[in-house]
Image 1: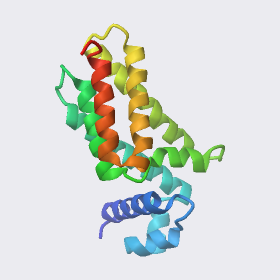
Image 2 (image 1 turned 45 degrees about the vertical axis):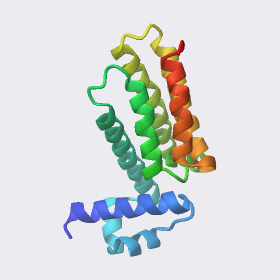
Image 3 (image 1 turned 180 degrees about the horizontal axis):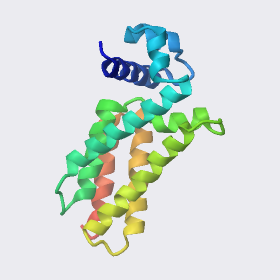
Image 4 (image 1 turned 120 degrees about the vertical axis):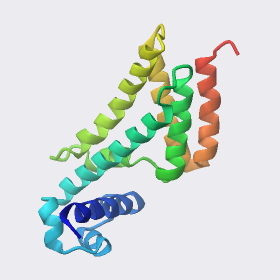
Length: 184
């Protein structure tokens, strides 16, 4: 395996394990073992577990935004509805056990590292994303609409652990339609 393949393997294994068992529930030895790399390989790419967590969150965030963007590309009529549907599919496929970013905020709040900032930035970016969509369709009040949909997606994410991604997304879509088409 070359360097970038090993680094990618470490990131993918770490993300899966952190998601399934939590950040505190997984040690570096387990990650090294499951990624099938040498201990020095891990330390050649990541200076600490915190650095690995930071990179895992960045990788996950990049994948999320790519997923969302690809789903609503060029959609000008109802980008908000497409975003809700895309988020729901993401929840079904990638985030059915809760939100990794919220876990990171909880686990690393007040710690002396960049993890909490990366996770909070992801949440802020969602609000900005919806503000951009609202401006793209010339919405009268882009800030309010962005807040509505940010809350809607965050609520959908939270409800996934209680009622499942599919049902949470169905409810979110119904509410989204009421926001987008209030007189219907």
